[in-house]
Image (cartoon, rainbow, N blue to C red; front, side, top):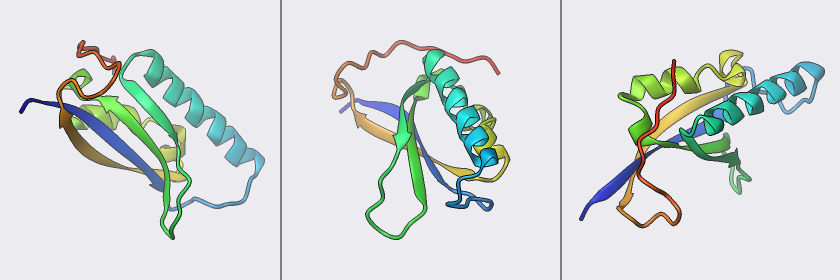
Amino acid sequence: MEFTQFYVVLLRKGPTWSPEVTPQVEATQEKHLAHLASLAESGVLLLAGPTQVHSDNDLRGIGIYRYDAFETLDELKAHVERDPAIQNGRLRAEYVTWHTAKGSVVGYREEPSSVSP
């Protein structure tokens, strides 16, 4: 069986996360969303969004990235970790490589793309 690979980025509460909504938190959220939008516009971020967790854990969001857009995991990390919410500690990222049967993702085309550093 042939597989298509994706990077899955799990965004979790970081060391400075707080449920309190302040002007600083709102500004960070706007910058976070702008960062994700730029990755999506470049074609490397396929899906992203917040999670509604039904248990006691710290998962806040999930992003699915093109595997073929990055030469290494470190290259992906460099792009993801430019996120202002990660830089200020509100969020932290965990990385997973996901394998799914080739052709099983509806609407997904295997066209290499890349993002500049």
